[in-house]
Length: 157
Image 1 (cartoon, rainbow, N blue to C red):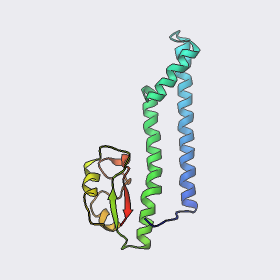
Image 2 (image 1 turned 30 degrees about the vertical axis):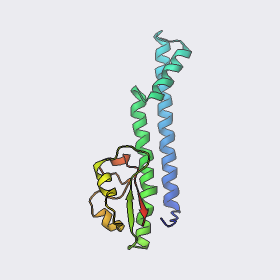
Image 3 (image 1 turned 90 degrees about the horizontal axis):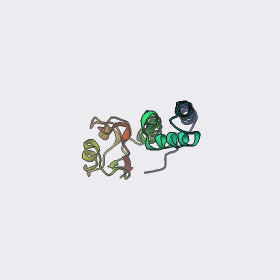
Image 4 (image 1 turned 90 degrees about the vertical axis):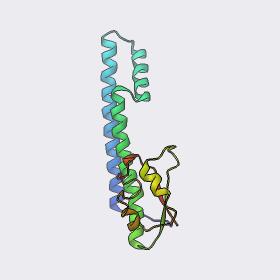
């Protein structure tokens, strides 16, 4: 794909807002972890060191309170990906509406949703408008069955 430079106050604002959201979420997790640790120690269920390990393991495994935190963080990061991945393709399409692209499956996932699989099977390149006419937006827009989990891209033909 041709280089697309997306810059200016909108991009900086997106990055700053994302950083602030991630910091707030990290602080909330830390506060919750400290409360959980204090509860384990106060009730005699664990020593300080054991409580730290329990909390660390909980966060690492994404269990209990850490699971919902991981989900929120994932959504924040995916929204930023949408804004910084799908939006540049739209900007390029506005500059060159006849530019054609292939739908390329994300390499991270081993199983892809039916929408992305179907769209990647289309071998003839299409314009952004033609891809959007399929009714699921662009990769990472969150409109495919895989929703915000999409890791696909449009690649210049």
